[in-house]
Structures are given as C-alpha cells and as structure tokens.
Image 1 (cartoon, rainbow, N blue to C red):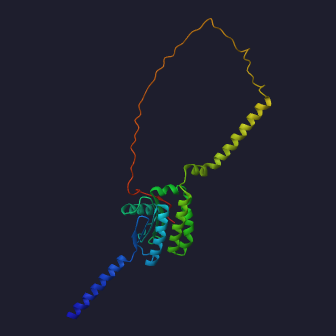
Image 2 (cartoon, rainbow, N blue to C red; image 1 turned 90 degrees about the vertical axis):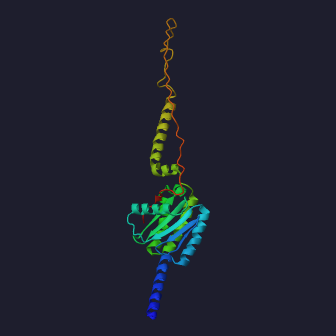
Length: 255
C-alpha cells in the first residue's frame, strides 16, 4: 500500500513538473527598448537571448520599442490579424512608440505593425516592403532567427531615412501630372511672350485720345450704404492628449 502511494505521488509530481515546463518554455521579456513574447516557442533560449541584444541596440539607437511576438492563435485574414494584435498590444506594458513583428505559427501569417510616432516613418507603404523583401528569403526557409534579424536591421534603416513628408508622398503619387502641367504652362508662357515681342505692342493698342472725353458740368455723387456683419467664431482649442498606448497601429498587411 505504501509502495503504491509512493508511486502515485511520484507520478503526480512528474505531471506537475511537466505542466510547469510547458508553461515556462516560451521566452518572454519586456523592457523599454524591446520586447519578446515567444508564446509559440519559435526561438530557443540562446536564440532569444541573442535577438534580445540586437533588439536592445536597435531600440536604444532609434528611441522605438522593438517588439517580436509569436503565437499559435491561428488568426486568418489580414484585418483580423491586425485587430487581434492591436488589442494584444493595448493590453500589454509596451511603449507608445513601437514597431511589432508578429509571427502567427497557427495560420502561417506574419505582419508588421507600427504604433505612435513610428507610424510617421511608414506613411510611405513602400518602406514596409523594404523590411518584408529582406525577410522573405529567410521566411521561405523557415529561418525565423534570420528573418527577425532582417526585421531589426531594415527597421533601423527606415528610421535613419527620417519621417515621410506629405510633399514627398504627393510628388510620388501625382508627380507625373505636375510634370505634364509644368510643360504645358511653360509652352503657353513661351508662345505668349514670343507673340508679344514680335508685335512690339502694335497690335491691340488702345487710342486714348480718340476714346476719351472729360465733362465736369454735371456731377452726381451716389453714396453707397455699407453694411458690415460681424460673426464671432469660437475656436476649439481642445486637443486629444493621447494615452500610454496608440489604440491601434498601422499594418503592413499579412505576408
């Protein structure tokens, strides 16, 4: 009886140890400059520690928080993926200005999300492509460490490019229209000046003497009543003070 009790106690202790091992096998670490929450256990402990060093360096250099999150949630669809991880971001102790790499092993989707001031660097969507194109060869080989290293390296490059201005975006989008309009305007200006200098002011000259007369004998002053309407427009100086989280980030779209 005692022997059976010992065997059962040992089995119970082993089961408890296995449960704790399964819970704590995923690497999770969050600091002000970076965060790794490896819920899908994609990285080994050594790989996660090595990535943490690179993430910390990138975060210190840019002032952004670099987040890598893996899961087995199986979220399908770009919109659903973005909403899910925006909610996850808001529920965690992440920094306001952050860029997040999401790796969902359940669905096979990945995504890049930006929060806070980082979004100003990615208004030009082609900057997301810089990161994704660099990661893609590693993702095809299922080399998540190499893909994550590319994410870190290329995100720093985007930071060094500076924020995307509205003028640059407009020129990139409508530059060809402005170019055509400039050519047409320049041609019209050239032809108008060429015609004016060719005629030397002869054509269309106004004969002031023949078409003018002065008569001061009968003068009538007509006064115009002026009415002025004044309307006071209240200026609303209230501003949204923001919060510790962004309440939703920009997404590159699953890839």
